[in-house]
Amino acid sequence: MRKAGKPGMSILGIMSGVSSESQDAADFPGGMRPSDMHLICFSNELKVNWSDLKKIAHSQNRGNTIDACSMPMLGGYCGGPEGTAITTIAEVMQGFLLSRASSYDVAASNIRFGVSDRTAIWTNCLSQLAFISAGYNVRLVPFLVATAGPCTEMICDEVAAMAIALTASGYSTLYGALGCEGAKMDYVTGMESRFIFELGEAAAGISLGEANEMVRQLIGKYEETLRSRKAPEGKSFNECYGPDLLPSKEYVNLWEKKKKELEKMGLIWH
Image (tube, rainbow, N blue to C red; front, side, top):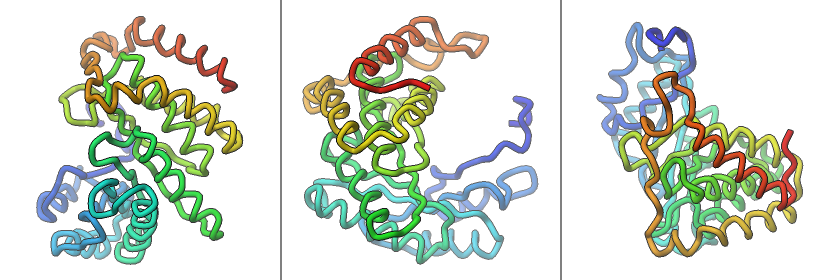
């Protein structure tokens, strides 16, 4: 960040530090600061191990800002969508209780078809709605994870379905989106974050009924491809962005085309 001329920008991490030692080693002068968001990612499902407890103890003793997280797996120990929604709520409560987190990252994922599958979207929406209906002002931050890669029509439709559904369900922050489920090197770009920003702004204030109809149409565009496991990998960051770090005309034009399709479904851009 300093080399890019943006010292002081907030950091979220270190998610890839699986052991407590590797994650806590990021806290040093010039590294992670107490004001940065420190992730405490709990084990599936509703389990806590010594590494989790050591990360919590380290962050609490240092006065770090904690961002807890979990990813309940629909179709695994949680059972179906209903059981996964209940587990998601329980994991959020566990995370806040144990870590004293200021926010909670969560994304229930279909164990076979990912986060953009209709059952996973339903589960994630229901979890936030449950807290709202109970009168709790809980700060949940969902990750949006796409199965297709950048510069594809499918990633636009996946991100749109997730962003519209989650915003209408009361989430105040959207996080992502990861192309190729985050599993392929350099297949995440800034354009996906632009989608999320514009979609969240446009979907704010629409009713659940309006969102439901839009999301049904969007899922219909990619569901068969998703379930056949033939999602296109798209293009890498270097193919989507030039040396000037601006998105390619191809990707920008693709998104503008998708925005017009969403307008016809009833989404109003601000």
